[in-house]
Image (cartoon, rainbow, N blue to C red; front, side, top):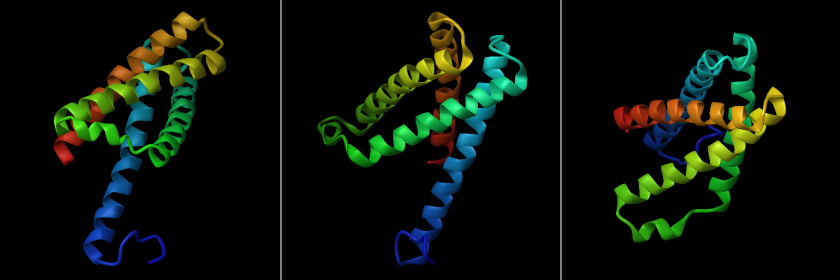
Length: 137
């Protein structure tokens, strides 16, 4: 098993489950945000889905890079719950900044409309992700 992160079978199964979960979550977020963009009259449905896919792809890549560079050791000073809340708030803020800017560029809309759309798509997707994480983990 070349892709296995650890040698025991349990770790491999858990690793693949987490990888599969994140893939499914990515697809659900793209679909949800595409629908929200369409309902906000951002663009036609297919174009809204494409824009959602593009901004989430870029945000995911940036998030993976940041997660590999920074471990945020100062969160250890807080309780687990407070640390999670701060992490989610920080990630939501970064998503808003990145996705709003990307929507502004690719959507050719005003900056206010792009950030309004980014606000609503991120609120909806973070609610979905929080529910998924609470149910599965």
